[in-house]
Length: 449
Ligand code: PMP
Image (tube, rainbow, N blue to C red):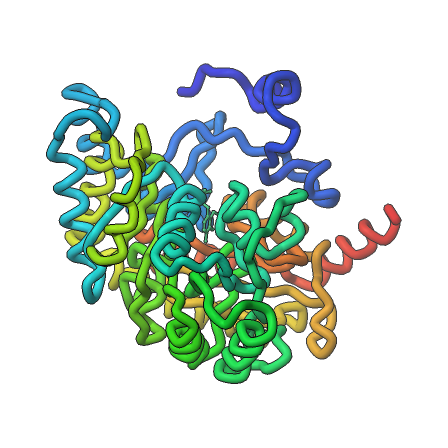
Protein backbone atom coordinates (compact mmCIF):
# COMPACT_ATOMS: atom_id res chain seq x y z
CA UNK A 1 0.00 0.00 0.00
CA UNK A 2 0.95 3.60 -0.64
CA UNK A 3 2.32 5.42 2.38
CA UNK A 4 3.45 8.67 0.72
CA UNK A 5 1.93 12.13 1.02
CA UNK A 6 -1.78 12.64 0.31
CA UNK A 7 -3.17 14.62 -2.62
CA UNK A 8 -3.80 17.54 -0.27
CA UNK A 9 -0.20 17.54 0.96
CA UNK A 10 1.14 17.36 -2.60
CA UNK A 11 -1.08 20.26 -3.63
CA UNK A 12 0.20 22.31 -0.71
CA UNK A 13 3.83 21.72 -1.75
CA UNK A 14 3.06 22.41 -5.39
CA UNK A 15 1.54 25.74 -4.41
CA UNK A 16 4.65 26.73 -2.56
CA UNK A 17 7.44 25.21 -4.63
CA UNK A 18 6.25 24.71 -8.19
CA UNK A 19 5.44 27.10 -10.96
CA UNK A 20 1.83 28.28 -10.89
CA UNK A 21 1.75 27.64 -14.64
CA UNK A 22 1.65 23.86 -14.09
CA UNK A 23 -1.89 22.68 -14.59
CA UNK A 24 -3.45 19.34 -13.87
CA UNK A 25 -6.77 17.72 -14.55
CA UNK A 26 -9.64 17.31 -12.15
CA UNK A 27 -9.10 20.44 -10.17
CA UNK A 28 -12.07 22.60 -9.23
CA UNK A 29 -10.49 26.00 -9.93
CA UNK A 30 -9.11 24.84 -13.27
CA UNK A 31 -12.29 23.23 -14.46
CA UNK A 32 -14.73 25.66 -12.84
CA UNK A 33 -17.52 23.08 -12.62
CA UNK A 34 -17.83 19.56 -11.32
CA UNK A 35 -17.09 18.02 -8.02
CA UNK A 36 -14.02 15.99 -8.76
CA UNK A 37 -10.90 16.26 -6.69
CA UNK A 38 -7.47 16.20 -8.24
CA UNK A 39 -6.08 12.74 -8.73
CA UNK A 40 -2.94 11.46 -7.04
CA UNK A 41 -1.74 8.54 -9.16
CA UNK A 42 0.79 6.31 -7.48
CA UNK A 43 0.88 3.11 -9.54
CA UNK A 44 0.38 2.09 -13.13
CA UNK A 45 -0.05 -1.24 -14.87
CA UNK A 46 -0.99 -1.83 -18.49
CA UNK A 47 -3.98 0.44 -19.29
CA UNK A 48 -4.73 1.14 -15.63
CA UNK A 49 -3.69 3.74 -13.09
CA UNK A 50 -4.15 3.47 -9.32
CA UNK A 51 -4.69 6.32 -6.89
CA UNK A 52 -3.39 6.68 -3.33
CA UNK A 53 -6.27 4.55 -2.02
CA UNK A 54 -5.64 1.76 -4.50
CA UNK A 55 -8.66 2.70 -6.62
CA UNK A 56 -8.24 1.56 -10.22
CA UNK A 57 -8.84 3.88 -13.19
CA UNK A 58 -8.99 2.99 -16.85
CA UNK A 59 -6.44 5.26 -18.51
CA UNK A 60 -7.90 6.29 -21.84
CA UNK A 61 -5.67 9.33 -22.29
CA UNK A 62 -2.19 8.64 -20.98
CA UNK A 63 -1.21 6.70 -24.08
CA UNK A 64 -0.40 9.89 -25.86
CA UNK A 65 1.52 11.61 -23.13
CA UNK A 66 3.74 8.87 -21.96
CA UNK A 67 2.88 5.33 -22.67
CA UNK A 68 2.21 3.36 -25.76
CA UNK A 69 2.90 -0.21 -24.58
CA UNK A 70 1.02 0.11 -21.29
CA UNK A 71 2.18 1.46 -17.94
CA UNK A 72 5.32 -0.19 -16.56
CA UNK A 73 5.58 -2.76 -19.32
CA UNK A 74 7.97 -5.37 -17.86
CA UNK A 75 10.18 -5.53 -20.97
CA UNK A 76 10.63 -1.78 -21.07
CA UNK A 77 11.22 -1.60 -17.31
CA UNK A 78 13.78 -4.39 -17.58
CA UNK A 79 15.60 -2.69 -20.45
CA UNK A 80 15.80 0.53 -18.41
CA UNK A 81 16.96 -1.24 -15.25
CA UNK A 82 19.57 -3.29 -17.10
CA UNK A 83 21.01 -0.27 -18.87
CA UNK A 84 20.86 2.01 -15.79
CA UNK A 85 22.71 -0.49 -13.65
CA UNK A 86 25.33 -0.93 -16.32
CA UNK A 87 25.89 2.62 -17.60
CA UNK A 88 24.09 5.91 -18.05
CA UNK A 89 26.02 8.68 -19.76
CA UNK A 90 25.88 11.46 -22.28
CA UNK A 91 25.68 10.63 -25.99
CA UNK A 92 28.67 12.78 -26.77
CA UNK A 93 32.29 11.80 -26.03
CA UNK A 94 32.29 7.98 -26.34
CA UNK A 95 30.73 5.11 -28.20
CA UNK A 96 27.91 2.97 -26.88
CA UNK A 97 25.81 0.44 -28.78
CA UNK A 98 22.37 1.43 -27.40
CA UNK A 99 22.02 4.56 -29.54
CA UNK A 100 23.08 2.93 -32.81
CA UNK A 101 20.96 -0.19 -32.21
CA UNK A 102 17.84 1.89 -31.64
CA UNK A 103 18.62 4.20 -34.57
CA UNK A 104 18.89 1.19 -36.87
CA UNK A 105 15.62 -0.30 -35.59
CA UNK A 106 13.81 3.04 -35.87
CA UNK A 107 15.09 3.67 -39.39
CA UNK A 108 13.72 0.28 -40.45
CA UNK A 109 10.21 1.53 -39.60
CA UNK A 110 10.42 4.53 -41.95
CA UNK A 111 9.83 4.60 -45.70
CA UNK A 112 12.13 5.75 -48.49
CA UNK A 113 15.49 7.19 -47.68
CA UNK A 114 14.50 8.30 -44.20
CA UNK A 115 17.21 6.59 -42.22
CA UNK A 116 19.39 9.11 -40.44
CA UNK A 117 18.33 9.68 -36.83
CA UNK A 118 19.12 12.50 -34.45
CA UNK A 119 17.86 11.96 -30.90
CA UNK A 120 16.54 14.67 -28.60
CA UNK A 121 14.89 14.76 -25.16
CA UNK A 122 11.47 16.03 -26.22
CA UNK A 123 9.11 16.77 -29.06
CA UNK A 124 9.81 20.48 -28.84
CA UNK A 125 13.52 19.91 -29.34
CA UNK A 126 12.84 17.55 -32.23
CA UNK A 127 10.70 20.13 -34.04
CA UNK A 128 13.15 22.96 -33.32
CA UNK A 129 15.88 20.87 -34.88
CA UNK A 130 13.74 19.83 -37.85
CA UNK A 131 12.94 23.46 -38.68
CA UNK A 132 16.57 24.45 -38.31
CA UNK A 133 17.66 21.64 -40.63
CA UNK A 134 15.08 22.72 -43.23
CA UNK A 135 16.24 26.33 -43.03
CA UNK A 136 19.88 25.34 -43.38
CA UNK A 137 19.22 22.94 -46.24
CA UNK A 138 17.06 25.29 -48.28
CA UNK A 139 18.69 28.59 -47.37
CA UNK A 140 15.17 29.95 -46.81
CA UNK A 141 13.57 31.10 -43.61
CA UNK A 142 9.81 30.92 -44.20
CA UNK A 143 7.92 28.02 -42.64
CA UNK A 144 4.28 27.15 -43.21
CA UNK A 145 2.38 25.56 -40.34
CA UNK A 146 -1.32 24.99 -39.80
CA UNK A 147 -3.68 27.01 -37.67
CA UNK A 148 -4.71 24.97 -34.63
CA UNK A 149 -1.37 23.11 -34.64
CA UNK A 150 0.78 22.35 -31.61
CA UNK A 151 4.50 21.83 -32.25
CA UNK A 152 6.19 22.80 -28.98
CA UNK A 153 6.95 25.63 -26.62
CA UNK A 154 10.47 26.86 -27.36
CA UNK A 155 10.76 30.03 -29.42
CA UNK A 156 10.74 28.48 -32.92
CA UNK A 157 8.14 25.83 -32.20
CA UNK A 158 5.94 28.22 -30.26
CA UNK A 159 5.97 30.32 -33.40
CA UNK A 160 4.83 27.33 -35.44
CA UNK A 161 2.19 26.44 -32.83
CA UNK A 162 -1.02 28.17 -33.80
CA UNK A 163 -3.40 28.50 -30.88
CA UNK A 164 -3.34 31.62 -28.71
CA UNK A 165 -3.68 29.45 -25.56
CA UNK A 166 -0.15 28.16 -26.02
CA UNK A 167 1.61 31.30 -27.18
CA UNK A 168 3.35 34.03 -25.28
CA UNK A 169 4.79 37.16 -26.86
CA UNK A 170 6.89 35.04 -29.20
CA UNK A 171 8.87 36.42 -32.13
CA UNK A 172 7.26 34.47 -34.90
CA UNK A 173 10.03 34.90 -37.35
CA UNK A 174 9.12 33.61 -40.81
CA UNK A 175 6.17 31.44 -39.79
CA UNK A 176 2.95 31.56 -41.82
CA UNK A 177 -0.14 29.89 -40.43
CA UNK A 178 -2.15 28.34 -43.20
CA UNK A 179 -5.87 27.69 -43.11
CA UNK A 180 -6.59 24.50 -41.25
CA UNK A 181 -7.97 21.73 -43.51
CA UNK A 182 -10.46 20.79 -40.79
CA UNK A 183 -13.34 18.77 -42.29
CA UNK A 184 -15.68 19.65 -39.39
CA UNK A 185 -15.07 23.37 -38.86
CA UNK A 186 -13.03 24.46 -41.88
CA UNK A 187 -14.59 26.73 -44.54
CA UNK A 188 -13.95 24.26 -47.37
CA UNK A 189 -15.23 21.23 -45.44
CA UNK A 190 -13.55 18.06 -46.69
CA UNK A 191 -12.12 19.52 -49.88
CA UNK A 192 -8.40 19.07 -49.21
CA UNK A 193 -7.29 20.57 -52.52
CA UNK A 194 -9.03 23.89 -51.89
CA UNK A 195 -7.15 24.35 -48.61
CA UNK A 196 -3.91 23.43 -50.39
CA UNK A 197 -4.54 26.14 -53.01
CA UNK A 198 -4.66 28.65 -50.17
CA UNK A 199 -1.11 27.62 -49.28
CA UNK A 200 -0.02 28.45 -52.83
CA UNK A 201 -1.58 31.90 -52.37
CA UNK A 202 0.16 32.29 -49.06
CA UNK A 203 3.51 31.47 -50.69
CA UNK A 204 2.86 33.73 -53.69
CA UNK A 205 1.76 36.74 -51.68
CA UNK A 206 3.41 36.27 -48.30
CA UNK A 207 6.93 35.07 -49.12
CA UNK A 208 9.67 35.48 -51.72
CA UNK A 209 8.17 32.50 -53.53
CA UNK A 210 10.49 30.06 -51.83
CA UNK A 211 10.03 28.50 -48.41
CA UNK A 212 12.06 26.36 -46.03
CA UNK A 213 9.35 23.97 -44.90
CA UNK A 214 5.85 22.90 -44.22
CA UNK A 215 5.30 21.36 -40.78
CA UNK A 216 2.12 19.51 -39.88
CA UNK A 217 0.62 16.77 -37.74
CA UNK A 218 -1.22 14.00 -39.60
CA UNK A 219 -3.95 14.26 -36.96
CA UNK A 220 -3.83 17.33 -34.72
CA UNK A 221 -3.65 16.18 -31.12
CA UNK A 222 -3.70 19.18 -28.79
CA UNK A 223 -5.96 20.88 -31.36
CA UNK A 224 -8.70 18.33 -30.62
CA UNK A 225 -8.01 15.24 -32.77
CA UNK A 226 -8.55 17.04 -36.05
CA UNK A 227 -7.99 14.90 -39.13
CA UNK A 228 -6.75 16.65 -42.26
CA UNK A 229 -9.20 16.83 -45.16
CA UNK A 230 -8.57 14.03 -47.68
CA UNK A 231 -6.20 15.00 -50.47
CA UNK A 232 -4.71 17.89 -48.51
CA UNK A 233 -1.29 16.48 -47.63
CA UNK A 234 -0.33 15.22 -51.11
CA UNK A 235 -1.42 18.54 -52.65
CA UNK A 236 0.34 20.70 -50.07
CA UNK A 237 3.51 18.58 -50.18
CA UNK A 238 3.73 19.15 -53.91
CA UNK A 239 3.11 22.89 -53.49
CA UNK A 240 5.87 23.10 -50.88
CA UNK A 241 8.31 21.10 -52.98
CA UNK A 242 7.69 23.41 -55.94
CA UNK A 243 8.57 26.32 -53.65
CA UNK A 244 11.84 24.58 -52.78
CA UNK A 245 10.78 23.59 -49.26
CA UNK A 246 11.00 20.43 -47.20
CA UNK A 247 8.00 18.64 -45.72
CA UNK A 248 8.16 17.90 -42.00
CA UNK A 249 5.75 15.39 -40.47
CA UNK A 250 5.26 15.93 -36.74
CA UNK A 251 4.45 12.40 -35.56
CA UNK A 252 4.78 13.17 -31.86
CA UNK A 253 1.18 12.07 -31.27
CA UNK A 254 0.12 10.23 -34.39
CA UNK A 255 3.22 8.07 -34.75
CA UNK A 256 4.24 4.75 -33.25
CA UNK A 257 1.32 2.62 -34.41
CA UNK A 258 -1.36 4.73 -32.72
CA UNK A 259 -3.50 5.29 -35.81
CA UNK A 260 -3.75 1.53 -36.33
CA UNK A 261 -3.85 1.32 -40.11
CA UNK A 262 -0.24 2.49 -40.36
CA UNK A 263 2.79 2.90 -38.16
CA UNK A 264 3.01 6.63 -38.99
CA UNK A 265 0.08 8.98 -39.40
CA UNK A 266 1.36 10.47 -42.68
CA UNK A 267 1.31 7.04 -44.34
CA UNK A 268 -2.49 7.10 -44.49
CA UNK A 269 -2.18 10.12 -46.82
CA UNK A 270 0.20 8.40 -49.23
CA UNK A 271 3.02 10.92 -48.77
CA UNK A 272 6.67 10.56 -47.80
CA UNK A 273 8.03 13.52 -45.80
CA UNK A 274 11.61 14.78 -45.93
CA UNK A 275 11.83 14.95 -42.14
CA UNK A 276 9.86 13.09 -39.48
CA UNK A 277 9.80 14.12 -35.81
CA UNK A 278 8.65 11.99 -32.89
CA UNK A 279 8.55 11.91 -29.06
CA UNK A 280 6.09 11.03 -26.26
CA UNK A 281 5.14 7.34 -26.63
CA UNK A 282 8.48 6.45 -28.26
CA UNK A 283 10.05 5.81 -24.82
CA UNK A 284 6.90 4.57 -23.04
CA UNK A 285 7.27 7.32 -20.47
CA UNK A 286 11.02 7.86 -20.68
CA UNK A 287 11.87 11.28 -22.15
CA UNK A 288 13.15 10.84 -25.68
CA UNK A 289 12.45 12.43 -29.03
CA UNK A 290 13.90 12.00 -32.50
CA UNK A 291 14.31 13.62 -35.90
CA UNK A 292 14.66 11.29 -38.86
CA UNK A 293 15.71 12.50 -42.28
CA UNK A 294 17.66 11.48 -45.38
CA UNK A 295 21.47 11.18 -45.50
CA UNK A 296 21.64 14.11 -47.92
CA UNK A 297 19.61 16.49 -45.75
CA UNK A 298 21.36 15.33 -42.55
CA UNK A 299 24.67 16.55 -43.99
CA UNK A 300 23.79 20.17 -43.15
CA UNK A 301 24.45 19.52 -39.47
CA UNK A 302 28.11 18.80 -40.18
CA UNK A 303 28.77 22.46 -41.00
CA UNK A 304 29.25 23.27 -37.32
CA UNK A 305 29.31 21.32 -34.06
CA UNK A 306 25.80 20.31 -33.11
CA UNK A 307 25.06 18.11 -30.15
CA UNK A 308 22.58 17.33 -27.42
CA UNK A 309 24.05 16.19 -24.08
CA UNK A 310 21.41 13.61 -23.21
CA UNK A 311 19.53 13.18 -26.48
CA UNK A 312 19.81 9.47 -27.27
CA UNK A 313 21.55 8.52 -24.03
CA UNK A 314 21.95 4.77 -23.34
CA UNK A 315 19.02 4.42 -20.93
CA UNK A 316 16.49 6.26 -23.08
CA UNK A 317 17.50 4.52 -26.29
CA UNK A 318 17.43 1.12 -24.56
CA UNK A 319 13.87 1.96 -23.52
CA UNK A 320 12.91 3.09 -27.01
CA UNK A 321 14.32 -0.05 -28.57
CA UNK A 322 12.37 -2.20 -26.12
CA UNK A 323 9.19 -0.26 -27.00
CA UNK A 324 9.58 -1.03 -30.70
CA UNK A 325 10.01 -4.72 -29.96
CA UNK A 326 6.91 -4.78 -27.73
CA UNK A 327 4.81 -3.03 -30.39
CA UNK A 328 5.83 -5.70 -32.87
CA UNK A 329 5.66 -8.76 -30.63
CA UNK A 330 2.32 -7.85 -29.08
CA UNK A 331 0.91 -6.68 -32.41
CA UNK A 332 -0.12 -3.37 -30.88
CA UNK A 333 -0.65 -1.68 -34.24
CA UNK A 334 -3.20 -4.33 -35.22
CA UNK A 335 -4.77 -3.96 -31.78
CA UNK A 336 -5.02 -0.19 -32.22
CA UNK A 337 -6.78 -0.78 -35.54
CA UNK A 338 -9.24 -3.42 -34.30
CA UNK A 339 -10.08 -1.89 -30.92
CA UNK A 340 -10.00 1.67 -32.28
CA UNK A 341 -12.44 0.82 -35.12
CA UNK A 342 -14.77 -0.89 -32.66
CA UNK A 343 -14.61 2.04 -30.25
CA UNK A 344 -15.24 4.58 -32.99
CA UNK A 345 -18.28 2.64 -34.14
CA UNK A 346 -19.66 2.52 -30.60
CA UNK A 347 -19.00 6.24 -30.16
CA UNK A 348 -20.88 6.93 -33.38
CA UNK A 349 -23.88 5.11 -31.88
CA UNK A 350 -23.63 7.53 -28.96
CA UNK A 351 -23.61 10.38 -31.47
CA UNK A 352 -26.92 9.09 -32.86
CA UNK A 353 -28.29 9.07 -29.33
CA UNK A 354 -27.08 12.44 -28.04
CA UNK A 355 -27.50 15.75 -29.89
CA UNK A 356 -24.65 17.18 -27.86
CA UNK A 357 -22.13 15.04 -29.76
CA UNK A 358 -21.35 17.05 -32.87
CA UNK A 359 -18.56 14.93 -34.27
CA UNK A 360 -16.71 11.66 -33.71
CA UNK A 361 -13.39 11.42 -35.51
CA UNK A 362 -9.87 10.07 -35.60
CA UNK A 363 -8.21 6.78 -36.45
CA UNK A 364 -7.13 3.79 -34.44
CA UNK A 365 -6.59 4.70 -30.81
CA UNK A 366 -6.46 8.43 -31.49
CA UNK A 367 -10.12 9.43 -31.31
CA UNK A 368 -11.95 12.67 -30.63
CA UNK A 369 -15.52 13.41 -29.57
CA UNK A 370 -16.57 17.03 -30.07
CA UNK A 371 -19.43 18.34 -27.94
CA UNK A 372 -21.64 21.19 -29.19
CA UNK A 373 -24.77 22.78 -27.76
CA UNK A 374 -26.13 23.30 -31.28
CA UNK A 375 -25.25 20.97 -34.13
CA UNK A 376 -25.99 23.57 -36.80
CA UNK A 377 -24.02 26.41 -35.22
CA UNK A 378 -21.40 24.05 -33.74
CA UNK A 379 -21.39 26.07 -30.53
CA UNK A 380 -18.73 24.55 -28.27
CA UNK A 381 -20.29 22.75 -25.27
CA UNK A 382 -17.52 23.59 -22.87
CA UNK A 383 -19.36 23.16 -19.57
CA UNK A 384 -20.81 19.81 -20.66
CA UNK A 385 -17.36 18.59 -21.68
CA UNK A 386 -15.93 19.37 -18.26
CA UNK A 387 -18.89 17.83 -16.53
CA UNK A 388 -18.79 14.57 -18.50
CA UNK A 389 -15.06 14.30 -18.04
CA UNK A 390 -15.51 14.74 -14.30
CA UNK A 391 -18.33 12.23 -14.18
CA UNK A 392 -16.31 9.67 -16.07
CA UNK A 393 -13.46 10.06 -13.66
CA UNK A 394 -15.87 9.43 -10.78
CA UNK A 395 -16.84 6.22 -12.62
CA UNK A 396 -13.18 5.26 -12.97
CA UNK A 397 -12.45 6.28 -16.57
CA UNK A 398 -9.87 8.94 -17.44
CA UNK A 399 -10.17 10.70 -20.78
CA UNK A 400 -8.47 13.80 -22.13
CA UNK A 401 -9.74 17.12 -23.31
CA UNK A 402 -8.51 19.40 -26.06
CA UNK A 403 -9.37 21.65 -28.96
CA UNK A 404 -9.13 25.41 -29.03
CA UNK A 405 -12.51 25.73 -27.31
CA UNK A 406 -11.87 22.93 -24.81
CA UNK A 407 -14.87 20.95 -26.02
CA UNK A 408 -13.29 17.83 -27.49
CA UNK A 409 -12.68 14.60 -25.63
CA UNK A 410 -9.41 13.01 -26.55
CA UNK A 411 -9.30 9.24 -26.35
CA UNK A 412 -5.71 8.12 -26.67
CA UNK A 413 -5.14 5.14 -24.39
CA UNK A 414 -2.11 2.88 -24.19
CA UNK A 415 -2.15 0.65 -27.28
CA UNK A 416 -2.96 -2.47 -25.21
CA UNK A 417 -6.48 -1.07 -24.66
CA UNK A 418 -8.97 -3.89 -25.37
CA UNK A 419 -12.60 -4.18 -26.46
CA UNK A 420 -13.81 -4.59 -22.88
CA UNK A 421 -12.08 -1.35 -21.97
CA UNK A 422 -13.68 0.28 -24.99
CA UNK A 423 -17.09 -1.01 -23.85
CA UNK A 424 -16.52 0.34 -20.33
CA UNK A 425 -15.54 3.73 -21.71
CA UNK A 426 -18.62 3.95 -23.91
CA UNK A 427 -20.90 2.87 -21.08
CA UNK A 428 -19.52 5.50 -18.72
CA UNK A 429 -19.66 8.14 -21.42
CA UNK A 430 -23.27 7.15 -22.13
CA UNK A 431 -24.23 7.41 -18.46
CA UNK A 432 -22.48 10.73 -18.07
CA UNK A 433 -24.18 12.18 -21.13
CA UNK A 434 -27.63 11.13 -19.95
CA UNK A 435 -29.92 14.14 -20.20
CA UNK A 436 -30.58 14.72 -16.51
CA UNK A 437 -26.88 15.07 -15.83
CA UNK A 438 -26.52 17.67 -18.52
CA UNK A 439 -29.59 19.59 -17.39
CA UNK A 440 -28.04 19.60 -13.93
CA UNK A 441 -24.74 20.94 -15.15
CA UNK A 442 -26.34 23.66 -17.22
CA UNK A 443 -28.44 24.76 -14.23
CA UNK A 444 -25.37 24.67 -12.04
CA UNK A 445 -23.27 26.65 -14.48
CA UNK A 446 -25.95 29.23 -15.20
CA UNK A 447 -26.67 29.72 -11.51
CA UNK A 448 -23.01 30.59 -11.01
CA UNK A 449 -22.95 33.24 -13.73
N1 PMP B 1 4.33 18.06 -31.33
C1 PMP B 1 3.11 17.62 -30.98
C2 PMP B 1 2.17 17.17 -32.06
C3 PMP B 1 2.74 17.58 -29.64
O1 PMP B 1 1.52 17.15 -29.31
C4 PMP B 1 3.66 17.98 -28.65
C5 PMP B 1 3.31 17.93 -27.18
N2 PMP B 1 1.99 18.05 -26.87
C6 PMP B 1 4.91 18.42 -29.07
C7 PMP B 1 5.22 18.44 -30.40
C8 PMP B 1 5.93 18.87 -28.06
O2 PMP B 1 6.42 17.79 -27.36
P1 PMP B 1 7.11 17.97 -25.91
O3 PMP B 1 6.04 18.35 -24.95
O4 PMP B 1 7.73 16.62 -25.65
O5 PMP B 1 8.13 19.04 -26.07
